[in-house]
Length: 433
Ligand code: S3P
Image 1 (tube, helix red, strand yellow):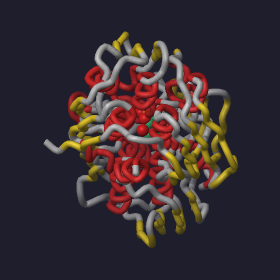
Image 2 (cartoon, rainbow, N blue to C red):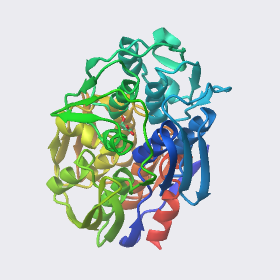
Image 3 (cartoon, rainbow, N blue to C red):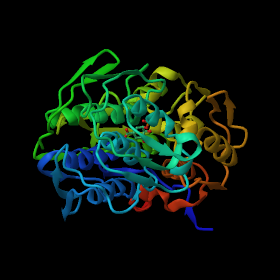
Image 4 (cartoon, rainbow, N blue to C red):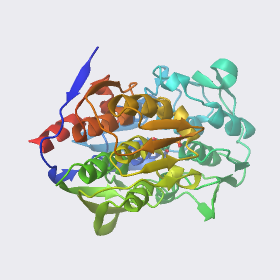
């Protein structure tokens, strides 16, 4: 089996890191540009496997997605009613965002589309999107009672029905799918969440001229005749990728890192709140707005951390960062308690169980599972161990940081980092020199 040897870091991490482009925003840039009318010049698009799945699906639906430089694309959109029936089964790969948002885009189209995906995506629940879309009148069929891939979206020749939907999960993918379908509805569609999930779709759809209104945790979209390209989208860096360096820089003694161009949309910055609570030494510099999204550089200096508690209300703001926060907790003094994190069970792998197994291999007796949460006992001795990424990109990177800051690690199935951060291992090696 392929393994990646992560050496214990000999010295501090120092220097600048340009953070790769935001995955969520890159997906949306290509999906919405395909759906809009006119040409969109996307700059700093994340050329990682997940976003390339979105690009390939949009090409198969008739959009002209042309790569004109590194991370630079010109997309000639089809318009809201101009997508074409694909002649192939669309492959969403490992990407829940590609699949769930596309289902919303296609629910009201007068043609048939079938989706497939990789083994991980084929296990993930799609009923959470199919159910509200079916309430809107969409006709979607899938395996195991219309819950799993492969999924077929049948042609729809009449407008979808507008709904008011109380989402049982705070999920930006579910919310975005309903909002996209709402563009094709016969009236205003509202999605209400218990806690507000990332709002990149709302921001970008507004830039394309869609009419959206937010009231508390509810967002309403009006049907539209057309979406019009904003001509240019500049994608900021991904705080979910910066997260690995925020933690590595905090726990590896003497480190001093400047993370350049990090998206700091308040619906994504839960990790900053938690690290501040843990005592991390972070500084946001040059706060600015780029392409409708808040951006900053983040200066991180190593500093002793202490355990914290956090629960359900902050989870949507740090949902992808829990593996690396768990690693931070290993190096902290005292216990960290995480509650209300059941959503982690339906990510690329069951991340609660993956964290439990892998961190206990690296620091025996450190992690306990409690319901849909974890208790992490910080400060236990670390040893070198072989650990499985479960083919989950964020697990592979979190475990690499644990190994680098601890006693080394052999990561099984390491190449999944291509999903969101293809240059991660090179960056780690560059910083350790
Ligand atoms: C995403 C939403 C989140 C997140 C995923 C990306 C998005 O998923 O975990 O990595 O781009 O909308 P959920 O909507 O399932 O919470």
